[in-house]
Image (tube, rainbow over all chains, first blue to last red; front, side):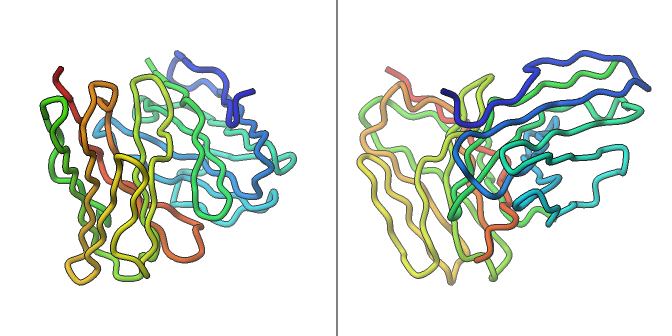
Length: 110
Length: 112
């Protein structure tokens, strides 16, 4: 009964392709996030949703489009993948200030 | 513009001794601070937090100290155990929790 689960765990694809990463949380939290961990290991926020509404979009290229069909799900769709998109992407949810992370999706663009 | 910084990329400590991990921040509006622990191929897991109204919070072997005037916090692990070997991230947020800012992590190695 994983609290925050994201799929796939690994994603290898070619430049120019479109791909999606799915995230689901069963904690009943209202707020969900996408974070990107780059090659320098910084964890940087990309998006934040509260009750399916976008509240933070941290100057992410519009090739990245989050979609929240309900408050338990926050998927990330990426168009026209570029080499620089290679990173580990973490989904998270929170309630009262504590973030709960999924195990990450390692995206490799070749 | 890294608002949360962890200047030590790695730390090595003998089992049983104290581990001290440090974190500095620049934004005086930060109200809430957290430490996360991360093992390879897993997501970060919450360890301990502290709000700006306190200067210390303790949970078992883990204690977080906050010095608001110096914009500095630290995580003490006593006694350190080999299972504590992981990457530790410091994070900070303003009161609304909309955004959490993370440091770059410190890799702790506890030697048996």
